[in-house]
Image (cartoon, rainbow, N blue to C red; front, side, top):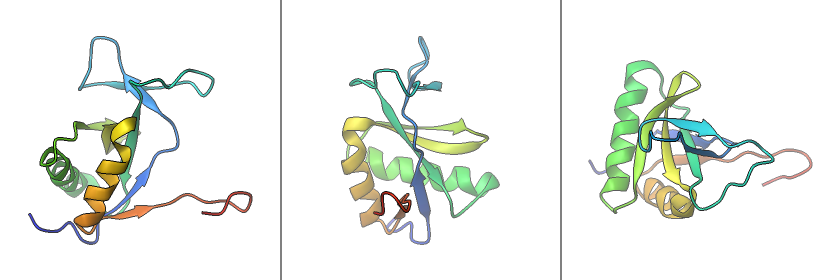
Length: 114
């Protein structure tokens, strides 16, 4: 696996945490007024593929992160596979994915252009 070119991921705006007693298998959104803390997770959603192909691509993304010892899980969120990474590992994860040719879609608005 040398490249994952043509894959595009988008970081979901909300933060997540592991559901009590289900670390690594189930997540829940952290309320906007809740404390994110050290245990918060970010989610990357694939924009460039769907269906079964999306699950295959996400597993490849997960393997790319595992190769550099970044813990992650691919779980269903909003009906699609998402890659969940600890917030403190976000920059290492996105950097690794970019090195494999994955594009990271950025959110922007008229009030806060990126």
